[in-house]
Every structure is written in C-alpha cells, then in structure tokens.
Image 1 (tube, rainbow, N blue to C red):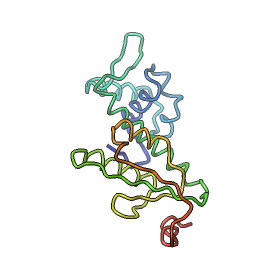
Image 2 (tube, rainbow, N blue to C red):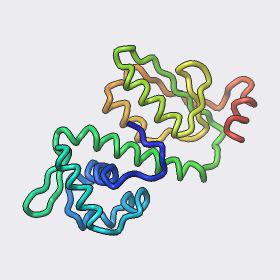
Image 3 (tube, helix red, strand yellow):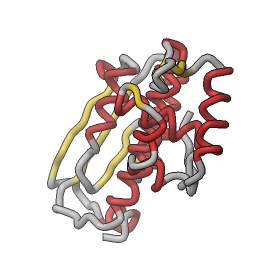
Length: 181
C-alpha cells in the first residue's frame, strides 16, 4: 500500500493525479507537480502505455473526448496513491521545518479485525517521521499533516485514534536525541 521510494511509477502517478483532480486529459497530467516530482517521464508514449495498463486493470476509463476518469475499482487504489504522494511531498518539506518546542503524540487501539488498516497507519506515521514512544504510542516534534486525518476518516478508524499536542514531557532528552533536536 505505501510506496516508500522517492519515485512513483507512472501508473501510480496517474492514479494520484486523478484522485486529486477528478478527471483529466493527457495535457492535464504533464503540468501537474506529481508528474515531475515522482517520475522522470516526458514522453506521452510512456504515459499512454501506463494509462492503457490502468484501463486493462479496470482502474480508469477513457472517454472519446480523451478524458480519463477513475472507476469505482480504481478509486481506492487512487486514494492510496494520492496519500503516498502526499507523504512523500510532506517528507521533503519536513526536512526544512524548525521545531516549535511542542510534541505531537498519536496513540491508537485499532481492533484486530482492522489489522490491515492499523498496519497501514503505522507505516504512514513511520514514513512521516514519528518515533515509537511505547507500543501504539508515537511521538513527533512537528505539526501533524492534514492528510493523516484524511487517512483516518477514509479508513473509518478515527474513533480508535487520538492526538495530543504538549510542550511538556518529563525527561524528553532521549526523545530529543531521536529527532536530533
């Protein structure tokens, strides 16, 4: 589900862009920042080939007008591609953020029957940069990205997750060292 590489494949990029813009023609994909940030493709042939593979898999459709749209089947996969893109963009920006002296803590108790969603959430917060404080309790020194709440809503797990922002944690020197603060 989560692509931990700095590059997306062209099909993943197409899905992420379609999730964000809804539908689009070939021309609408190339100026989009994801197409330049995640994959070094400038050939429409590569794009057309990737779009054709997505159509064969039933994830997108193409109208006669050249407009590409997500199918019902493609919506979920596109959502994850979009979130993966957001994680990667956030990760690049987070490297330049200064700490405001506050700790963000996320803790969760997601039921076993939603284990896949729990594992996905855990992988996302790891990629963002959260560090495990205790089992299912994670800490982070920067603002929580908005797309993380999108994940919680989309996966219907927000009732099992809590966020806390605090300036005070007794003896936080070890945590500061984890983040090189």
